[in-house]
Length: 368
Image 1 (cartoon, helix red, strand yellow):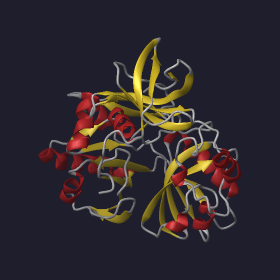
Image 2 (cartoon, helix red, strand yellow; image 1 turned 135 degrees about the vertical axis):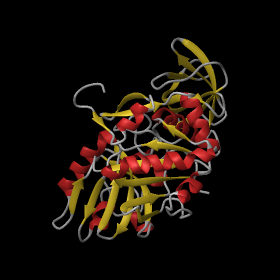
Image 3 (tube, one colour; image 1 turned 90 degrees about the vertical axis):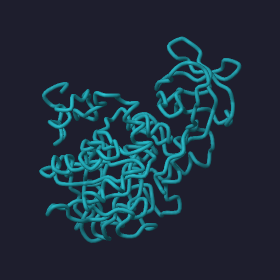
Image 4 (cartoon, one colour; image 1 turned 45 degrees about the vertical axis):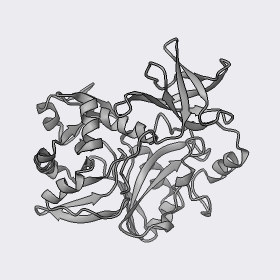
């Protein structure tokens, strides 16, 4: 752990016993990778077979009471009116100027019961904003740290959950509240890897039993425990944004091409006026993918130049793609830069060539 204030997952002892390399994620000490192959092996396991991630650092919050759904819908960007109970929805909490406070998943249990999973570092702020705005009768509770969240991801994820007797086969972006060995669990058809998979939300006190059962059930499929390093390479290959890099208080949903998660026709949501104006102005930089054609790995903050050497953008996320075996990146680029254009990235003073390419960089099976 980096200091005495760093929090630990309820599975921390499992990670250290496996010799995981740990790092700080949003104030939580979490595994980056495990011995025996590291990020590349873990990434490949998810793309080809199955892997399990501990993502218990992610926040959890509840919004309950009469009118909870309508209240949340008037605050967050996406339109909860488009989904039914038992469904989940990707959405964003924006500031009044359109900047993204956080992106999160809303799980609709009913008109009076919403379960939210924000990012670790932003949970308190999302909860604060909702609590301040909540009408009488609607309660917003921060339950961060009361749940463990395990993501079973990959083509063999159904078989792993079936071995545990857990429900599988429900639609993408839906969830089932059930029991496992007498304990309540929620099985969500969600994830951040681009592959078919599930996220299991359980009580903290049940986390080790659930983890151990998943690890044992993965063995016939050569599944692996996976760290957050592989989670990052997997999501970048899909072009999924990371808050703090590709979405932020300075990078709006419009700029990140996340307008599909905005209910533009809704009467209200936080930041609507600013985002509508930005959308109509068509002047801001936009997120694009970059496929490296030279030798080098792009990183966040590096400058992107056009063929004439003019600055046309900046990298927001960059990594080495284990699937493609070359560098990939997400970058904010001027609107005049078209798909297929040749650009260069200033990688530590060295020009690395790349092609503008619309993500995803690889085809996943998340919604299959």
